[in-house]
Image 1 (cartoon, helix red, strand yellow):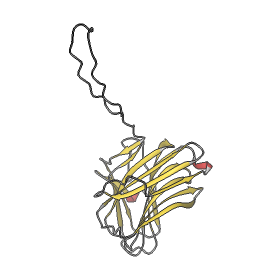
Image 2 (tube, one colour):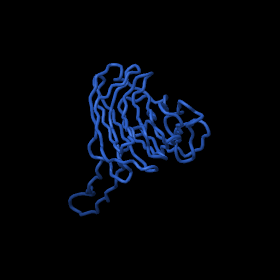
Image 3 (tube, one colour):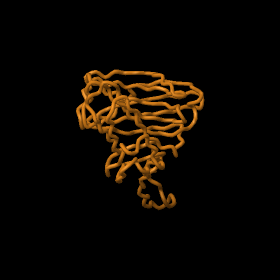
Image 4 (spheres, one colour):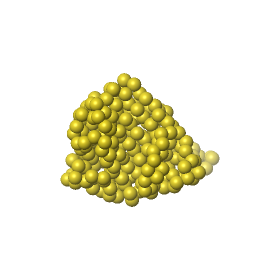
Length: 239
């Protein structure tokens, strides 16, 4: 941030004069690479983001926007859905988004995933796995040509997700073109954002060191009986 300028003395040394009143300088802000508050209505698909172009969704007939949130309804187990902003090309990025489930998972796990540097079937990913046992499993991973490798995992026991509550996720990816650092945080809206990442890892996979798209994925694991499951997201920002 740029600090306000101090008092500036005016006039010659012989005659005291008034000094100028300091003027506050606006704090510079980082322009969003992508941003969407979903303040529109779309019957099929997610439409066009406020910043970042059109969403490319995996199943438009089951995905919509209701005027305040992006909506995805999954009715069968072992189902994956993605929504990508393919017009975005970002290398170093911090993504902040949220999710809300209309039911607590029973019999199986629900995965919410945030994607960065998406290029074809390769990307970096932060996952929050809401388990039927009450545990929240948080991990960062790489997907290289369709094969996922977990890089760091942390289990938060006793998380005990309650239907209807909003959970926030932040995924930060940065690098120098040769190696990348991945940092992930997951927390309830009733809590403050953790000061340090819960999961962090470094990776040097050559195919993942350049720019790519950003987005989110949902996955319902086998055995889940609390279906259909409706997932909502009220905000998505990448900067």
